[in-house]
Image (cartoon, rainbow, N blue to C red; front, side, top):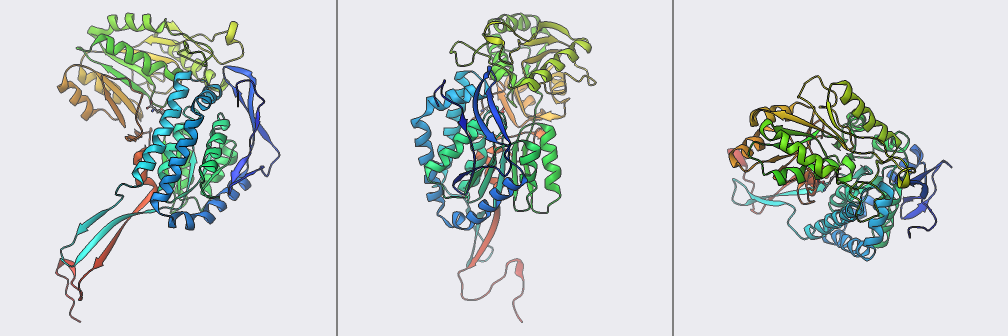
Length: 503
Ligand code: UN1
């Protein structure tokens, strides 16, 4: 779709067909930088639609899992080729639908391609192990079997890459899937369905149902034939999904939820690295990554210089239409997201923060029809009772928290319910090691921002941030059973553990 062409009329994608919802209701996808621009209309699906999609996935499972792993992998190569042939156009759609800068729209597509390439490449790699037995004639294989049907429920902020982190490894291992894209980015969900179709995935292997969480997502997660629910999004929705799954003996919830991520800027930090890492961590995607940092925990000796340089760089950030190459920060995704950020900003003032940048909603010029806001930056002592220092704002809202030692920095870092991403800025490898071993996180960095993970690494967190099953490459552990298969190559039975065989 070119930038000014007509909105698309999206449908659900079930058993290889584009189908309408059982309800006649629709919802719109609008550009958050210009809400006059409707990108498409999509079916507001129901429990009945979710059921229909799961039935298609169940039906397709037997043949799909019987296919060679390498053949399944090759379809992902087709997928990558198709995406590459329209990469720039797709990147622009990502930016138009979710509002992140065009550089980030491109990176989202690149990350999705990387996931698909990883899946294709790993299809020819060993996927199990052969182990010896106490008995020389016996040999065991450890193999992986697909779990069955997965539901993938994904967020708007990485509308292309995250669904592929979830669907890629699941499908490669022989599972079939139903995917519900975020209601904020159905257009990119639709594009994914189209690419799976064009790449030649058989009907029913991957199905796409559009709609809202309670109406389409919850019944999908609750369907008895869904074996694994893969979810990335908020803690509130993730815990609801965990509750749903706990009603079924077979159902596993793999959830990646929020974070109150941080940079630890130690006494000996390289200031240029600290400041650039801070700006990237706090303001890329307008602070709306799960891994965005909302806290800079800074050694008090560095605090003044860091604050001054950080504010100077932040003031240079260009906010505006994210399709413009010079724009660093686009809009917040929607009115509700913007209100949440404003609430956190107000709460910081109430809790006695020293406000350094006011974080005001922007109006006039190109801002009137979008959800634009300035960065909100404040200084505040750590306080266990604080709401703003411990809860995620999901926007450009960041605290500078002075501390007196690396030990205190670690303690402050751990004093939230979350544990997703963190970075330490230091030249001292001993202190970096202390941080590495004592902070609670899923993704840790040294002398880098808290964002920018690559797909061949585990992506997930601890505490309220995750259920301990990271996605991207390591999702394989969540979507497969490991089975032991033992063969006797001898002509008589010999048992392990000295077990007698005389009868
Ligand atoms: C997210 O934070 O919502 O690590 C996903 C990163 C990206 C993925 C972020 N590769 O910043």
